Image (cartoon, rainbow, N blue to C red; front, side, top):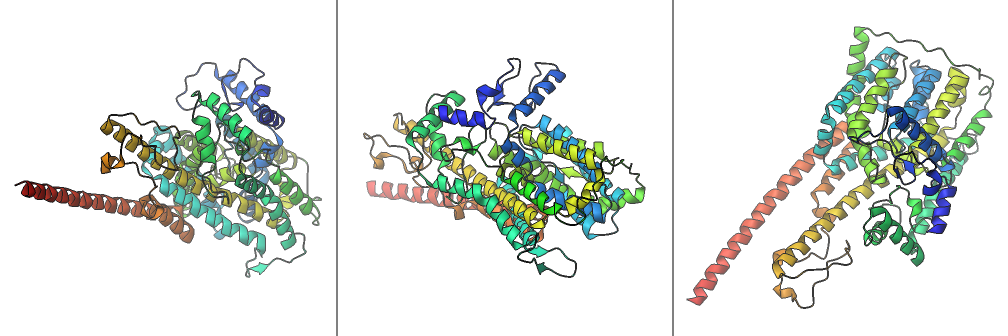
Length: 591
């Protein structure tokens, strides 16, 4: 425990090293948590804001800085495309989105991303008739609708109605779409006259893509090999003691978490609950902090882009003066019809519901609430609409990207916001030439790593929820058995891997069939949620539209639920008929 605590302090995440101000509120996992919904205010707002700012500074480390750059594979291509094709100002967008990042870091204690609204960006890039006022009008429409859902609390009701399997299926489908886009970006030229494979030895060629891939997957391979190794006994004991102290239970919690950390595949699919700080580096399977791979990739990409002619000579010191956007009724109507309506389901599902579900899986002690996320998406776009800023939102893909490259706290979001604000104020729109020269191969590799993390998290959450349901079922059976037999059944293992121990003085034939503990979990093909997840993932990946994918998933979920209910009723009727026949036969034999 001492060795692990020293390592965490060296990474900037130690508990004791960060508790320097006795006036700060309670800290979770070594950092002051962002205020939760419904929390009672104990201090004035400006003191809370100052305390949160100090916590962000204390959380900042190389790992957080590297993780903050993980979402550039999505942000930079869309920013450059909208600036070149549609006329958005890159300098103003960098400054305003940097402010978005800083405010988001103060509101959420997770690396909440700020990324472009992808459907609006895709429509603008594919349709040359879409103007900047129409782009902003579409963003205002979506933001106003989501803000209304957040303020009224309807987004929480919507979050409860949508099945978790449908949400995880949507994440898997989006991950597949991002994987395809990442492969295309890294291997092929983006040209209008057809796809052409990149040259092998060019600056932005296949060798650069292969080198970036090796750097991006180095940490994943290291953790995979360590996950396959059996953990040391002293580390397990230390984790048991630490987890028991954190949970306040004293027994059982640490051992249960250690067993859960070994559930899943060695290839990285996890059905587990992370430690209190949401950091897998504190478990026995990982003993060191995550290397700053995203930071290395971005620095290498900037170095390569600087070698291209004209990329540095075009830089000018000084910010770009923002231009106010004026709207007409025609711009508002065209923006809503062309881009606003298609973006609304994606923002509601992926930017609110899915990102909250993913934050709950990655950071179970401090998940983001749907109400707060929806309110944040609405406010930041309504505030920056007049300056003609690219419409932005939060998203599950961006959160997975930040997490994959090492971000665990809001300090990553604040660091990225400071970088945007600094570059936008220093160079303004002249930075566009350098950003256009950034290697697409590096961006494609970073986007691919983020998409794999999104799929991993979705599959792990689905398997974890299924394991939890199985454990709850076995616990119910244990309680029923104890009530029927009149004896107390003590399950010291509290395991999800098998049945509870049956007392030696009770024979198995004396246990009623309806109350016996099932020794095996229900197969995946018999789970209705499996078919809802597959339908949502396939429909989302095939259509490229989350609305269609979620609609297909909801239909399959309803159909499987009705089928399961009818089957249970039919089985119950057969059992009752068999029981009546058995009673009649018994009476006839007695006569």
